[in-house]
Image (tube, rainbow, N blue to C red; front, side, top):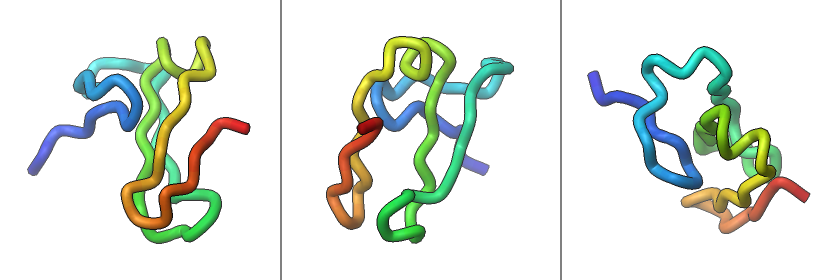
Length: 56
């Protein structure tokens, strides 16, 4: 099983209790993973499938 990593900064989030994962809000096909740090700083992420950029 591959470890999840933040979609923005690419750090592994296995021990990050504040990390979240969700489907792309635009296409719903790809999983977006966000670490605590990137969530608090509102760091942008890009969907690898539809190129949606969030957070808005």
